[in-house]
Length: 359
Image (cartoon, rainbow, N blue to C red; front, side, top):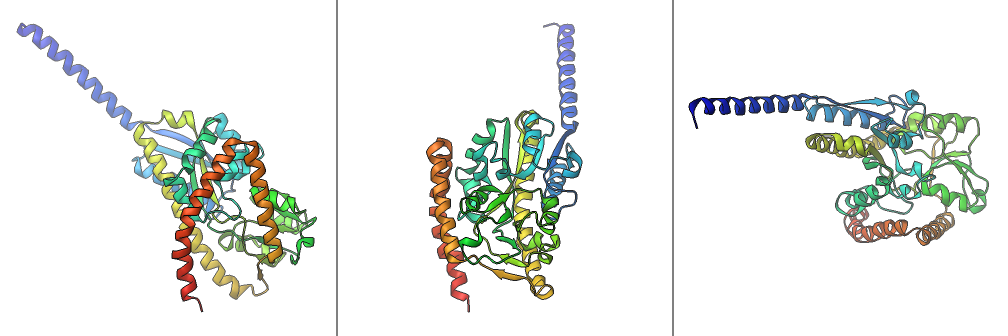
């Protein structure tokens, strides 16, 4: 090859390399912007902090290449419309609770928590190391979305009641705010469960629209003021591991570069775990102050006959769903089998430890 032709070829290759390097640098510098809609109101403690923490982590880990803006319920005006907004692409990400969508997609309810089900560590094991994440994406994938764990409250309290529940007769006609599968159990026992947006709970209880309100636990309940109008506080049975969710529009997620996809998943997973720890901390602090500052609060557990009836109805309702829907059956069997193995360890570790040192 002549020197002239070689120089021409070398110049061409150099130009291509320079163009590729410039293009790569521009791609690395490109900022991707996502919009998140949350079910919660602005500045909601813990729940709202989780979305802010996730967005901050994504920004930091991506060196500013991934920006996430958050719209609370007061802005988008649809606390229970997050599923549809993310599905339609109106928002790229949603932060909510999967069991809110059971009316339109029944199998979504399994991915928040189930009555008499797994504890938070057991459930996280199912999500991350069992079949949980795959099954959840099978359900949400049909609607053009991914769903990821979005923060756990741990065991939730049974709710704030204006009147004591002494028997199954006291359940009949009871108007209670409670979502998810537990609402179906209450209904089967004769109660009248409803789902009310978080921002309207206190007003509903104050105006006697409902007789009882189930929300979370001391970490969030005390600051809501429920104890002022419904001082009987029942322990939980229905939500042993309430996991929130990050819904992500599938098309939008897959348009992100591979590294930003991984950064987003890591930010969601880290903020979810941090919410679980924060909730446990805040519940401990609030429980301690509650006993000192609000001695009028009566902490009770539901009578044995009521719990037994709830457990029986819960099993019947699960069986009905499994008989009608093969996917529901698969999810139930997966959860039951994982809990069987994990619970044996929980019994001989955490439970045995607490029992052995209790006085």
